[in-house]
Length: 332
Image: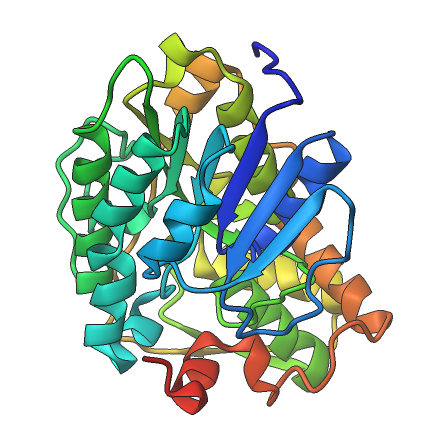
């Protein structure tokens, strides 16, 4: 990796979200000055105060604020969105306004404000369902939902803006798992771990479906690589980022192994046998990025958080479940 100067100021949209809440302190510890823009709908105290951290409680649709706050930053990491299909489908108009309509103005203002490197968090769901064993970045996109379609649309918008002074990068993460100060318990590994720990029983629907996952610390490291890679190796590039493609059955067995033998696994039939899988060979070959953490590590981290009482009322507290929180907030 080519190390960029620590004088670089980084602007993170959604920096108090599930990944952002781990990425932000990681980058500050690396010596960067970070500005976080976030609606803070999952709690005001997710990020600890730091002289090198500026927190803006605000909305990415506020173009006046963006024009005021973006100048002086070198790198923008765009994490903010209405995450995952169920949350998006709660209010499709809201989802479109945040996930798609706000994107072109953000890119344009970023360019005019002197942002040099724009890293966009897309999703591996843009591929849809593929039969090929190694789903790579050159394959056609067949998004199945508006959430995924808008992710793909934003990729196109961003990459069209490539220039000598503006380096667009797209990353398509697998499903992130593990512990964060802004915890999510509505993604597959975290769901299974939460139920196994607190109910001693998990249900597996089908089970042979493949799911790509990545430990949250590896996800954070991937952004570090994109920040520090030479411009020539990343400008206009798209990277998948995942650990392994594992069946839901295998994920359930890992959860039982970590949480304890008293966990019961109920196997139920499912009409939804869709499998998702991605290849992360390109990011390894081009940038040298490899995951260091396993899915078992993510399960252990969650177990330790439960043991330490870092997470409360995890079966009912809406702040761990995007769709419940979105439903009650009536965000517009």
